[in-house]
Length: 87
Image (cartoon, rainbow, N blue to C red; front, side, top):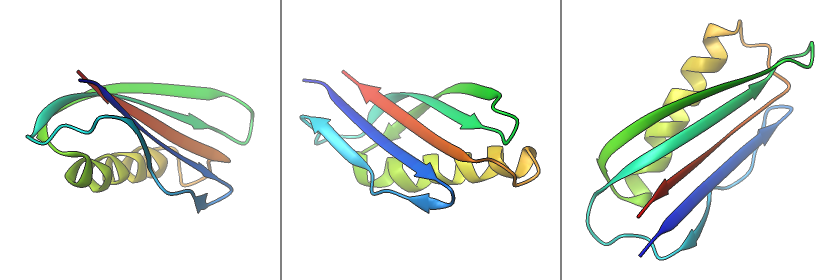
């Protein structure tokens, strides 16, 4: 059983998180990869591990992480997104 969740934001408009595969019924460990594109065109990537979460609890946690990364960049990113997977 595996599941991947993806979410993208372009020009401040966030699209709904999309889950593919079979979401785990029990809390799982997720591998998260996030990216930000700055106005200069530079792409920053970040990775993290989130433990003990379901799809529904994962989305707001990673959303807060993305918000923090955007704030670290001075709130001036042209797009951002993330993908998380579990097996």
